[in-house]
Picture (cartoon, one colour):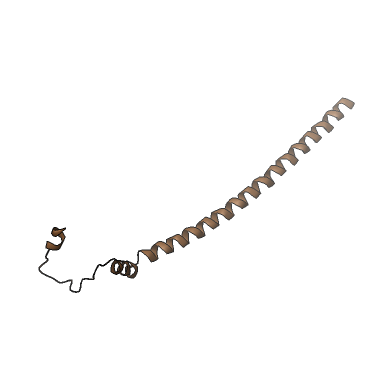
Length: 91
């Protein structure tokens, strides 16, 4: 009977140690998930900022301003029936 009680006590101790080990691993895993979620939200914010920057860079007004800076001129009449491509061919 004593051997049986010793085995039960040993089994309970081993089970409790295993439970503590799993509980500590769960806490560490939870901390890792929390850190990854923070990094994910930071990356999403950075991505939104970049999308806004891209949208502003490709807006029509920005493109027109940059085109004017390098010497392009806007087309005044878009209903031209005769198009002269000789300027493009001279280059």
